[in-house]
Image 1 (cartoon, rainbow, N blue to C red):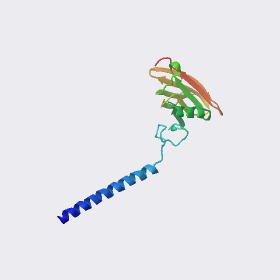
Image 2: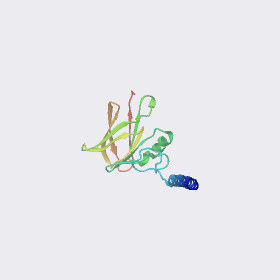
Image 3: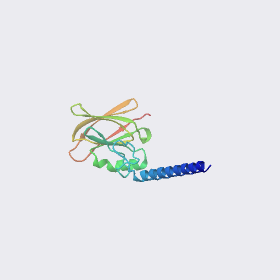
Image 4: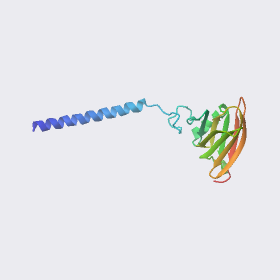
Length: 163
């Protein structure tokens, strides 16, 4: 009987110690976690600050898209002047659109960017020059010619009258 009692006491102590260490380790890991990286395409946990979504990279082109939430929308609007190209996608009643496929082609017909906007705003870092922006929402495509100046920025707005 004494041996079984000691085994139960040791087993209970071992389980208690394991749980205590596991919970403490989990709490330590949570406190030590920092958020966001370039593969995180949401604004949650990003390291850009101010509500900005994560900056994405495709070749030598950087871009960011989003603006569905109020904080993210305001942050993207504030940042527009610091990016060579600002795109906006709206529908009937100025409704914001997301899931717009964007293709940017340079003056020689070469693909520069192919991405899907996660919200009504997309900001793109492009070299100065002439580009054509193709934007497709659902089955309807539009295009705009844009000139990126050596300093300053360009804007293009896309509007679809159906949803």
